[in-house]
Length: 241
Image (cartoon, rainbow, N blue to C red; front, side, top):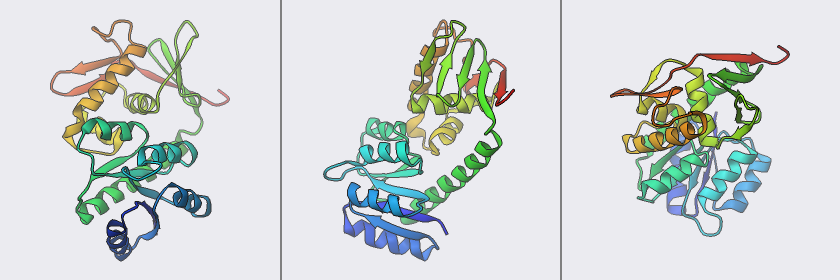
């Protein structure tokens, strides 16, 4: 039975949502803000967090970053915000998905289960890849522990969490065409077309770090009508190799 933590200061949302999730065989805890959330996380094994963005004091974006830095627990943001840029900020802070208020409880349940399934699959992949310490592609080497890339000049370049996740997606699927929807699903767990531009912007940022000429990229190439592809082979370096 997965354990869900709802963090929201609105009892009119918490009470019916908790009842609905319990009726669907989920264990549910609730918190009305950051202080209660921290207490629960310290004393309970939480599998996923439903986190409201607009709360007094520490908002959901700050709490999302805290959760990702300390616990690495999947987070779905609950938001009444209409600005796509604000939602992108939440996703880039480590949220796995977002759902807009007012929401359909069944849609939220489906999205919650999808995030849990993906996290289970990622855990299995992580266990298989546990001995991989670096990945070479083109003239670059990705240090998977430091989350930075090193070029032929031996200078390390740090990656943001979002850039690292996107690069990992490409490195795990070299020379395959990945559509924007696939990249969204693999990086954010979403299929919403409203965020197509977030993938384009993130890819542009990553290219500025790894391409000699961003106007004529050789590593991450654009496929017209298709999306993107990592155009160079990838090799893995294993621990104790």
